[in-house]
Amino acid sequence: MDLTDSPQDAAFREECRTWLAANLVGEFAEAAGIGGPGSEHEGYDVRLAWEKVLGKAGWTCIGWPGSAGGRGASINQQVIWNEEYARSNAPGRISALGEGLLGPTLINYGTEAQKERFLDPIRLGEELWCQGYSEPNAGSDLANVQTKALLEGGEWVITGQKVWTSLAHWSDWCFVVCRTEPGSSRHKGLSYLLVPMDQPAVEIRPITQLTGTSEFNEVFFDGARTPADMVVGEPGEGWRIALATLGFERGVGLLGHLVHFRHELDHLLALARATGRSTDPLVRQRLADAWARLFIFRLNTLRSLSGVDGPVAPPEASISKLFWGTWHRDLGELAMDLAGMASTVGEGFPYELSELQRSFLFSRSDTIYGGSNEIQRNIIGERVLGLPPEPKGALP
Image (cartoon, rainbow, N blue to C red; front, top):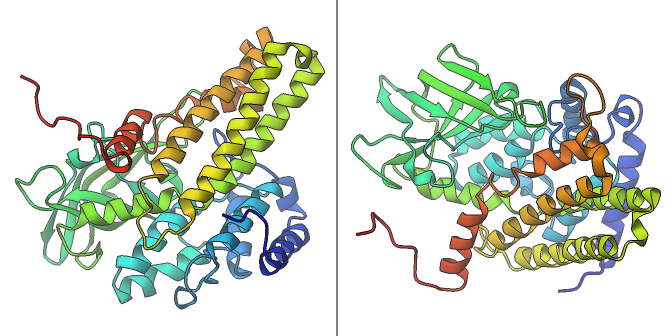
């Protein structure tokens, strides 16, 4: 694995930097860095406007093939764009679920009519998407989905509840995994439906987090409707399509997260110097360990991306999720230790948090959402190491 830019990639990196520097001006410069973990509520209007600027200039969906409106960028170029975007401190992307998850799923499994209807609005920042997977009793155990959909008069009628639905309150559409075969169980009888959110039968309830913000939501479908042709793949193939979507979740975007993580680590290094804690050998060891693990994360992520063929990411991608989730949680704890007693006092009344406090609180969820650490270890054990699968069913 060659970690240096080829001449072509170096030119592409310069193109990225030049465009970002020329366009991150005015209100977009003022919005620098907003919309990160724990602050996804910030700057909706300006971030949506920025999304449309990116789309018009061809800087969204660059990994999509040209036939879908993308640039057909190589993995290396996608990595470069994500790194340079994060390094420029540009506003947090507001259409990541549409671009990174639903779009690639439609490109690989959608009908021509679905591609024609949805891909351009995603690419141009005109329609936003959320993910209807998790339920109160079907989080990491996704196959336990109970939301139901029945075909009536040329429409799917959906009834059930989803939870932890990121940015549902801003979304125009939701891709929903639901049970369309009565009496089915586990991964059988599921379908992958595209459902409009702006209808009376859809209720969205924000969930207030430890950070005081509400990125996540509960979503209730009480007879919500979508046309019969809004199913991706065949009815009953939802499990296969849902797993493909999850495969896209752990792709090149991780390299952008890495640059954000490096910003946080640099902040801690500066804090340690300012407080005189950088001379403490135990503190220095923890900081060095955080730096080394972050470097390993980058190398492992690049390794997991190399040689990927097709829409489903290799099981080794679970290693990256397990690694970065644990690393970021540990970094949050280190931040609080460095800040000392001051870390327990808010920035203002009644509940204003500093950047480090917000990052610490949000990082407590990193080892849970997107597949808990326990689930990732099972996947690694069974699919990577070839260990016997976990026993299914009740123990005697």
